[in-house]
Length: 376
Image 1 (tube, rainbow, N blue to C red):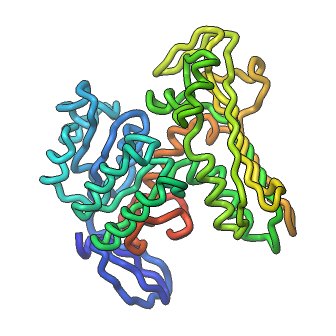
Image 2 (cartoon, rainbow, N blue to C red; image 1 turned 45 degrees about the horizontal axis):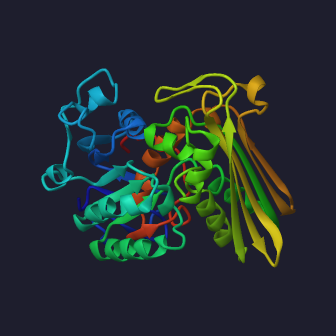
């Protein structure tokens, strides 16, 4: 990996793909890609397949693919991702069959929202000296019992000279990074409120479980007691914003409510009869000295219908301060979250590879932006 990819920046210390420090002084930022970035796709469900499709437009090459689904093992990655062409790489399992025989620069990891499941997978990648971009929501800004796992990943990544970044559309952009970017023009910020009304239809079976799709109201409420029902990552977004804005919180509260459909709903992965859960309303409140200073409100739906549901899809943020800033994102980001999630993961690859080793947050990398993928 050494010498394959490096970011050259004016008056900055930067790192090549092996973690070696380079001291340079150039007039402008230049991405030097002498050959395609070698990528292993770990998990090729709905999100992983989107990543594979997007990579076809980048200066990248898929060199391996891992998935536990027996219906995918042995098939060509291009077939599984519905590319309409063969890539000459088969989906394999167990992971060691790929990891012990394939040289790669980065792994795109898309298997689960939960860190207790993702931890051994990501740790095995770090142990082999592989950089990782993951969409594991609980790793975005680890809380409570996840902090120790995050510390261990950070420690091992620095030891191995590799980088790990958890990102996505939410957490990773609309309810945290975007409001933070908007705060750049403020003299002060006193309160933040973010609302998201989103179509979850493009997501796969793992996300359907989090939504509680098809459950009864009682089953949904029972699932919330164990933390497996509802969107994963909203508390992490709240804590990340509070940390980044210097808003020390005394307490965070989370509320989850089921949405029951009155008409049949259908996605690529599930069919829901009337009377069952087809979405959720979830809110996280951050308090300091008894005052609510951060509010995140999210409504996620399957097969949404504006007239039936009474909401308009979109993302809205307001930062009360000097000056007060309002941000509205309409149209397809809230409708095509699966595409946006994959885009965040793929577009962060060059940012990841130019960063210092360790477990990173979105604050630790260069300004997030679209990666054209064209060789310089």
